[in-house]
Amino acid sequence: MQETFFSFELPTRILFGIGALGNLRLELDTRGWKSILVVTDEGVAQAGLLAHLEEQLAGLDYVVYDGILPNPTVQCIENALSLAQGRDALIAIGGGSVIDSAKAINAVKTHGGSVLDYEGNDAVPGPCGPLIAIPTTAGTGSEVTFIAMVTVPERKQKLPLVSRYLAPTLALVDPELTKTLPPTVTAHTGLDALTHAIETIVSISAQPMGDLLALQAIKLIAEHLPRAVKDGSDMEARASLSYAALIAGIAFNNGWVGLAHAIAHSLGGIYNLPHGLCCALALPVVMEFNLDARREKYERIAQAFGVSSADEGIARVRELMKSVGVPVRLRDVGVKEDDLDRITELALADGSVLFNPRQPSPKELRELVQQIW
Image (cartoon, rainbow, N blue to C red; front, side, top):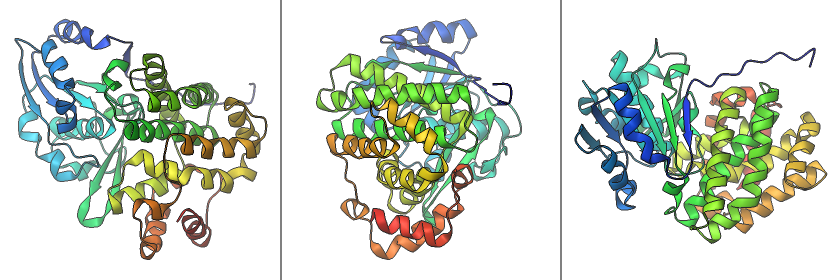
């Protein structure tokens, strides 16, 4: 450790546990937050989860905005701004798209302008207003990260907003809220968390505390994701995945992700596919591409999967994908071969590439994308 130097930050307070949603009213009353905008999507309301939240808000001045899309656009985010003005706090209840959107809404509510004014790194000029993030999926870790991804449909591109000021004030993580997730969504979000964990371990910005969290997340996901996909009412599996997604989010927020995420962002921007699915499609080939640059790290990842060699670890990722019913090729999810050049171009321009342990040439990345197709 005498040669180790790292930075680690976690500004978000965390409440975790089955039934944690029941603490929401106390948190609001303690801080005097009486006027609330709830940011969500239609799926959360249809699953009955919004009703549980509204029980905690009885007697307060609140309004619900449920216009967030699975890959949230600038427009669907800005449509909420008039509702947000003058509110004491925002509450985001939903998956990563909802929480990302609430972060963007919060930045514009606090500092003005439009969503794309905050594109890129450190464009948010100062602290934002109070934001409580309540995840209903176990995948993105957005409840503890500094990042929000926004889709610009006319450009067919997903763009990042990155600032420590975007981090939620409070993450209220109640695994019971994930119980109604369909098997497919459970699989996609779990593999998103797995990608966070694996990529942050091999990132050029990896650091010891992040590695500890990410390795534990891999163990939990490998054991519990197939169980949760098979039986959504298995609360041990659900709680383990919620915890894994949380700690993987903390890890990658401090170590960052790499090439698999760059490819995933390009796929999501062009095809509006689920982010976790896009990550899973890219992850095994990116691991193979990076192997010689980080073999020792991939051996530690393999050990978290319960095998000894890096090659066996990559094989376990593919086996896990197969066990939860996730496709392994782009063509299986409707990606056209004619779009592979554009996917490559967008992936090369994505900031996540900068943290990948091996920098791909345009030719190498095009070959990787072809291999996935």
